[in-house]
Amino acid sequence: MDHFARLGMPAMLDLEPADLDKAYFSRQRQWHPDRFVSKPPEEKAKASAEAAALNDAYRTLKDPLDRAVYFASLKGVELPGDGKTIDDPELLMEAMEVREALHEADTVEAVDALAEKARRDMKAALSGLASLFLRDDKPALRKALLRLRYLDKFAEEARARRMNLERAKA
Amino acid sequence: MTYSPKLIDHYENPRNIGSLDKNDEGVGTGLVGAPACGDVMKLQIKVGADGLIEDAKFKTFGCGSAIASSSLVTEWVKGKTIDEAETIKNTDIAKHLALPPVKIHCSVLAEDAIKAAIADYRAKSAKKDEPVSEGEQVAVPAK
Image (cartoon, rainbow over all chains, first blue to last red; front, side, top):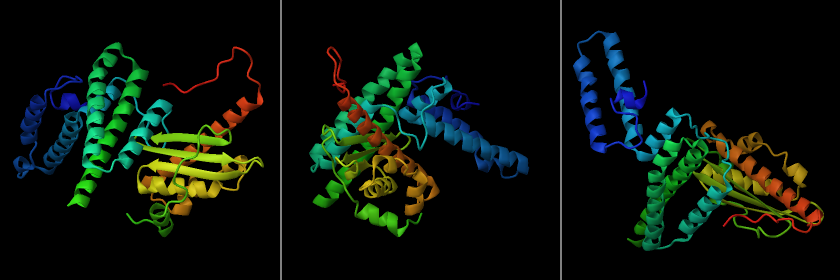
């Protein structure tokens, strides 16, 4: 069963977060261990397996990027895994440039400006995915999702850098 | 997770951080990245007239193991021929730094980086050797 089906949601790139929450919380109650205290072990085991699968599905679908990557995998678009370099010099050049800029940013304002640009780029790239899915353009999807991974990582690094700068100021 | 003293040493005192002029004829640049963790690694070599690697620099944005792996490679390649440098295996890097299993991919990335730098250097010198005929396009990076 895929993550969408497990949550009773239509398999779509765009989900209403409130619908997803609702679907998750009602199912989570259904498999809650408290309801299986006096049940035979097989039923207990089944309930805990269901609860774990449900959590996994919810975590994946809740995050827009994880959801897009998962949705792509259902459509046959696989991203390269660990330990293989990506063959996209433009993306690598872009990633190197922004990471260098972040490394050199020595004020909170400078970090915020870079983070803001990354957020805008991410939003644009995420909203561009829908049309790529419609066209079933697998190479372009793969490229866009990899770029999103790098932007996401950059946002994380920018948060860490910001925290360090704030701490140094205090 | 415990890290080996060698790894910590390379992480805390990385060797050869920096950049070489990528337009220099003797410089080969390798740029690689790990999709799963969003790391990016640049490794450059400068080959002298005698065919030996006289300098190597790296810049890595990634975890400690990725930094240590690339730092170690820049140290290893200096004074070697490019053919010798090409034989560096990720398993040697991982063994030297005693990388934990979940960090083996960092050494793979460092091997990819030196291979890419060597390939770039070779492509450059091949182009230098053959005269540019009329009408031939010289490849310019996009943008």
